[in-house]
Image (cartoon, rainbow, N blue to C red; front, side, top):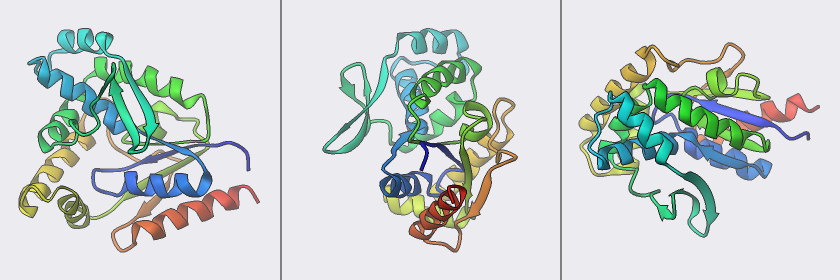
Length: 219
């Protein structure tokens, strides 16, 4: 099988991260969690007291960052300089802030460069919101993974277990609106993406479906 660059886009809670890891394990690929990069910017913006619409401040912040992924016994980790911020960026507050920050052109321009540099390697799976539409429009394989709001909210609730289900659903609904209606790089399937609705599928079944599609391309 020739080396591929695979993208998996979709809304929050659709199962992109879990499915990406399963698919990567089957293919011997690496996963790039692009959402972690936006979370990292949001985390540092909060630490610096910046508002999500402060483009000048965000541009200066981005130019000062040194973000990179490493692999260790804990799995894929995100470093900012020499500091592991992987766990610090997974709070509900940073989740919502990253949605607002990701809509700013200065942030997207900065992270676009980083993602494309990483993507030169191939044998990679990029998961996010606009991987197949903006970052890698020429990706070898594109998937768009979705599910009902109820299903996605329940999955996120089971992950977090720190908020009432109703609050998780409300946050997700608001984030869906932000991601879908933003002017810059709105959340939507690429025209040539394979759309998979995981509402009634286990994430293992979704990964198998994706693998079958990839294998069929190489027959």
